[in-house]
Length: 343
Image (cartoon, rainbow, N blue to C red; front, top):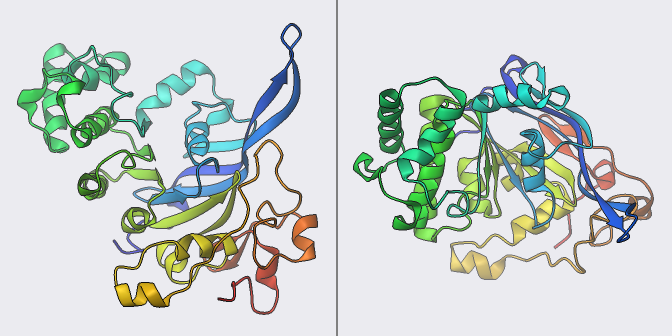
């Protein structure tokens, strides 16, 4: 997939996120409960997703990837910030207004089994969005279910079966079919391949790619596996402790990462060539990821950063465009030599 294959004109922006925050309150007290703090799961995140584009989101567990996706879809009500679907501000919409917008934005969850009702047949699972949001006849819904099963590579004759009768990869295809039932334009893919066998992951990622080409879908693709993100994404955002620390085109990120945290992530990706693997250096980060309930002052990464300066502990770095289409939040990117870690 070429980096330039997705539309990049400003008029093609489908999803726009501005200064998004989602803080979960920490409550204490059995009889009289009071707020004593907050978990800053997502803290001042901004980006845009174009029509037909895949924005990959990577980072360690607990960095806020899934919460970002859920906040965009208003499954979690944002604490602050704005989310636009084209020119519609989602955070100001009421429940009924959001319900009417649901057909345009869907989500595929990580656990392919838990997200399917074990008491319903595949046909009923896939048809449910049509029952809720359309006035289609039973015959039309059945026809549509068969079309969707074929589209995702499943046998329509198995529509009467139940979720436990399918493999993990097949169950995820059922989830994809359900998400496509109402012809959405945007889908949040919340680690949709992490629970699958390695042999199946590539098949499902290729299915996402083919569906995007056929239907012009835009994805927010959340994952841990950098190789899969590299394969499917047009641009990639790197998150750490609720913040985006770097966002750029896929080729820029994998060939020339600028943020120290991104460089450490990239150094952990295995090299297929055993000779190159033995020769390359690994960047080992010390310490543990801080708690989002008590994040460090200044740059949230400074306490683990191998090249942190005094300013990093005092001032929050500005998230800015340091090169064309390359955004970063790092004080050292302005200094001579940039923020490259010496190996």
